[in-house]
Image (cartoon, rainbow, N blue to C red; front, top):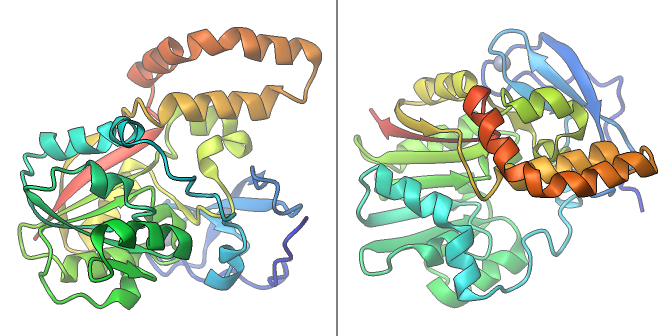
Length: 303
Ligand SMILES: [Zn+2]
């Protein structure tokens, strides 16, 4: 199966949503790792602000076809949910955030919201995918989970204490508009937390189009710490904490990227991949220490 994209290469790309520039340079090509399209996608870099983006431009309706029904997975065990969310709950604790009203943008079936201490947090979510939003609504109720985008949800000003984007901001065509909206629904001193793949990581540099976390065409903008810090500054936030470690994401991305690069090359490369599996975790630890880790998590305060 191949999903057609109604955007011929001749159509000029939209201006960069972060800075308005139309000037960009080509970096490399990539393909859909899920095999839903035969088209080749282009990764380009804005010459003005430095952010990477995926071309061709695609509408939200076109992008929706690239999310398989099982993109968010099925209903897992409670223990798995807590383990899979440990990166996130640990980061929240390190930011000294104890409780309050929290909105998770792109909350999926609510796994992160479920892993929070329900005694101290009032959990809210926004989710575009209807099956996942429905699963979250079963737990948190319709009043706490909005089906649609953050921009459509129209929450009251300064309604939340914390807004999180876990693997969410890179999926939208409008990251600048989303952070502006996050600023509007937070009071001064409120916190935004963003986790996304690090386009300056050793994995991004080495694997390029084969990097698992590139996830084109679903990931529209690809950030580094400097490009994300600039976006936060431009939308009314003051950056205060970051980490490039993620035991949950980084080794998984390394394994899948290596597989994409080697699996179809030769029998020898396939054997090398299988032999390398036990060494990937220490390897990622070492490379992430020397170079940059593959997942970027940042916290910023509304100013
Ligand atoms: Zn730009």
